[in-house]
Figure 1: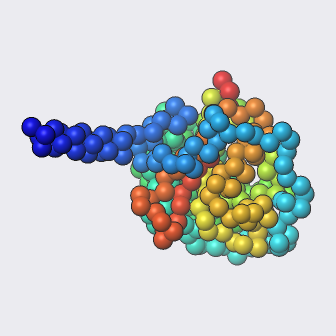
Figure 2 (figure 1 turned 90 degrees about the horizontal axis):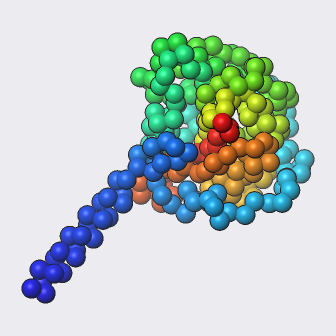
Figure 3 (figure 1 turned 60 degrees about the horizontal axis):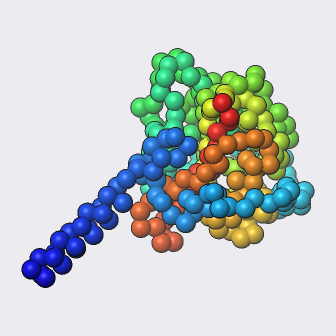
Amino acid sequence: KKSSGVKRSLLLLVVCTICRNTTALVVNGVNIPHARETSLSRALGPTHKWPETWPYTSADLTPMDPMNDQLFYTLPKFVHHAAKESRDALTKYYECVLPTAPATSVLDLCSSWTSHYPGSWKPAGVRVVALGLNPLELALNPSKTEWTLQNLNKDPVLPFEDSTFDVITNSLSVDYLTKPKDIFKEMYRVVKPGGLASMAFTNRCFPTKIVPIWESPFSDLNHARIIGNYFHFSAPWEEINVVDVSAPGRSGQQDPMIIVQARKAL
């Protein structure tokens, strides 16, 4: 009897473990099946204490190489900025958050030759604006329906009407923004009430172009908190959360894939 009781306890433990590992996380009202509940995903949770004032100086946001970004991107850079498993995780995340209703609108900031959106995603009448620095990269982006050139570090004012977009994304370039508070304020202006803004990052970068705070320290937790501050101090964003979709079993051998997202109040 004692042996059968131990077996039942072990079976219950296995079942609970399986359920815990396969339950989809619901973040900002969206089911994200492959998101992981980690200490990082709780980094901006209810117990997080925000700074009392904007914590960054001009020096904190001036990269080692202050050269005009448009010159830096004169030649297209047809490279990937994350490993395949991390890119696949980001694409699966976008499968969860991109709108599926017809005639919706999406803005991809700091865009390039790929937005990492699912190839099968393209609702009827959807508008996808890719905004970036290199015309050749943007022209080859398969997800866009239109594209526009703009250097956000020179001109952070977005050329769109208020409440235009259902979702705004930024795939792996938030660490290069030198006027983040202005840009996040503009994002709030052009996203629709209830709309979502998603900022994805990993651990790869052009080291001379990232802002110095990204390296102090160079950690996922610090990066998530930086983006959280961008949201928090720019506009009355709600539900500022961290989504960790890094590949299972990551232990320094794989790139992370982390998203900080928030919603505009209804």
